[in-house]
Amino acid sequence: MVRVKHHVDMQAFETVAAVLSAIDSPQEMRLFLKELLTPGEVRDITLRWRLLELLADGLSQRKIAEELKISLCKITRGSKILKQKGAVTSRVLKTRQQNPGAE
Image (tube, rainbow, N blue to C red; front, top):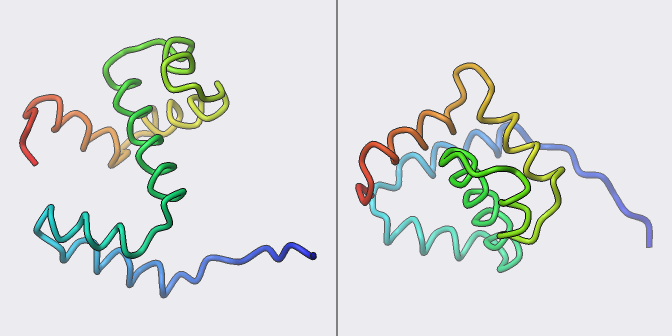
């Protein structure tokens, strides 16, 4: 079987971003994400979020790799995201650290 590399349909991406930003209920967002994503995609996105949280909390990359049982390469990518100037992810994580439980 030949593997086809799909390009990102930017119009669809913009639509998905708009739909996500319009959902204001955590319960509705959970349902939407479960409908949209496969169980594997849910696992991947929650794992990525968890590693970003641990990085933001100051855990070492080796400790995170051990705890989450993932490669240092995945963690390095997350670390680069948090170091980017103006990264939305960093801002969101800082806000969550300052206001724990505010979902």
